[in-house]
Image (cartoon, rainbow, N blue to C red; front, side):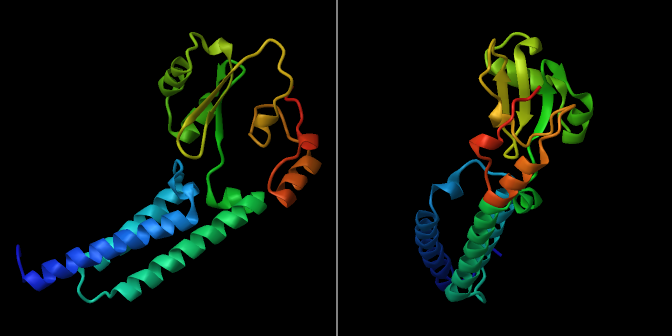
Length: 197
């Protein structure tokens, strides 16, 4: 239970060291995007990576070449998914949960809070962290798909609110042509940004 042989210990140590170097090389190749704040999709990929690495390090029947093949396929699939997300909005929303507006124009959206399984106190805490004292000072609070809060205070004369494009805002529908352009181009252009009423 506690000890089989020094050969097994040595194999686990050498395998872990080789896999460590391999993963660092893969992350260097993929770039810092892989190290950004994680959405639910990224967590699944990371957990799968960890499961493969731990299985190879402690399971004598699994070879390094098999682990490397599994990790390379996983990285290719992750990069292909990221590439598709950057180009097709529908694919992006199929993989990642869309951001949720939980407060709009100073008013908490109780139904959205229930759907997102968050409390009004969590929203108030996010507003306080922004340095604001009243919900009435806030234009919008968004629960982003990485679990972070975006809090945007009201401004006396906002030039535009194009950063809100695509969010489900109560009582407002984004123009269909602008939606189609974003779906085709993967991002909205300045010409498709519309002021929110």
